[in-house]
Picture 1: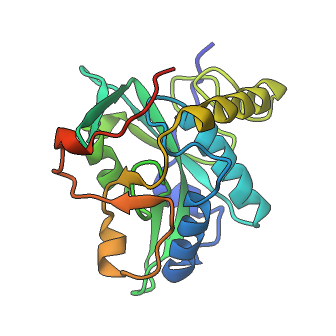
Picture 2 (picture 1 turned 90 degrees about the vertical axis):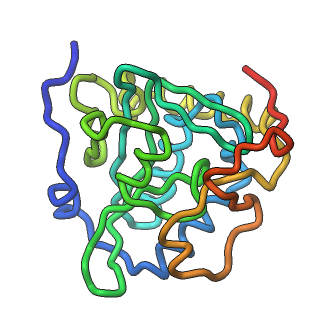
Picture 3 (picture 1 turned 60 degrees about the vertical axis):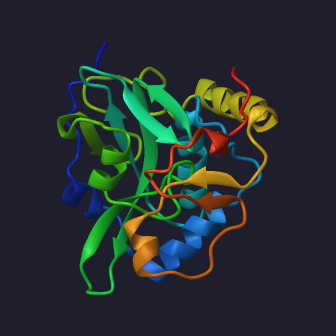
Length: 220
């Protein structure tokens, strides 16, 4: 049965979590993005497993992440990264409440497989050509509107099946992913606050789709 539960707005989600300073968020992003047991370098599949593991790690740190979901519209979601197109019918990544330098609070998507830093929901959706009405943000443990599972669209993150699925996917995809550094898109935040960056990725121009930069990845 599909869930009738409405998706939370950014403000609703923020009400249940304490925002962290932007500089701390960037350090956290770099730490998560360099985790050696998460296959960020395999864009073909596995976003639900990566989001699940990142959310669990952040929760263990005392943070309260939510999840951003993007669903296809008339066409599949599409990312063109270093000369290769990746198409999905949905994509998911964690979100965190971040306190900006001007003291405002923003919900930012943490997606180290696509970006070099935290990004806004719009920035995240735009890179996949996702229709704005197909983007959702939900609190921890809540399924996206129209679906029954919050791990993927059918499975709950509290189930043994989710743990087993995430672990198996990471074992497979770590063996199949491209050797680091992986290409990722520049984030507005990183451009505004350049500094120390992780070791497992390289930032490319979003318009750079030359075939000579095509990552050598094995398909599932």
